[in-house]
Image 1: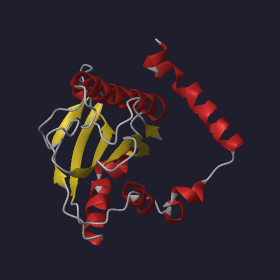
Image 2 (image 1 turned 180 degrees about the vertical axis):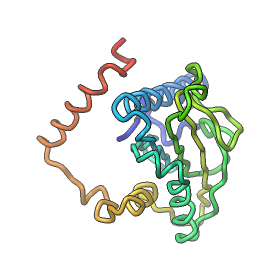
Image 3 (image 1 turned 180 degrees about the horizontal axis):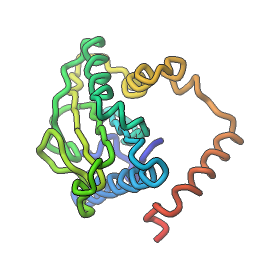
Amino acid sequence: MLIIPLPHSPTLATIPEPDVRASTYKEMHRYRRALHSLLISKSGQALGSVTWEVSRKAGIHTHWQFMPVATELVKKGLVEAAFKVEAENEKYPAFRNKEVGAGVGESGDFFRVWIWMPAEDEKLVNAEGDGPDQGGEEIFEERGKQKSLMLLINPEMSFDLQFGRKVMAKLLGLDRRMQWRDCAQTDEEEMKDAQAFKEIFRNFDFSLE
């Protein structure tokens, strides 16, 4: 699933107006939280999520890719390990535990991933905020616990834009779905899936308020 902002910009950091950049980042996280609430309502504590972004100044239109994943895979550290191992296999720089916000403080390109799981204890449920904290390795988000990892993309390296999808496909044993081109749907199938999602997301879609 894609979370795509309205401003046409290759990265969040290159949105020129600071207020637009801040409100865009905040709204994208608000959609993530809404999706988390949907997951909790449908699965209890069975599903967490992985959200990744390729932030490249040479990109076209920034976006986040959101994917539900079994909470057990997050809790056991298998999702985090999968990203780190694949980066090592590709000879990419090592992941760092770092939250970069909208990326304004970063001078270069980067790949980031948020790994989230629902709260096991209601004591971890926070009041709604504006998004993740800016400094911790592990942070508590509304209704769950989250870790943020960031990998620098050096100018001289060749980075696979399908890296996030490749990691999750391998982890889930879905190698045949690594390339999105191999998973094409007909227009009718896409419309059916879109309508089904709209129906289950309706009660969580703050844009309809």
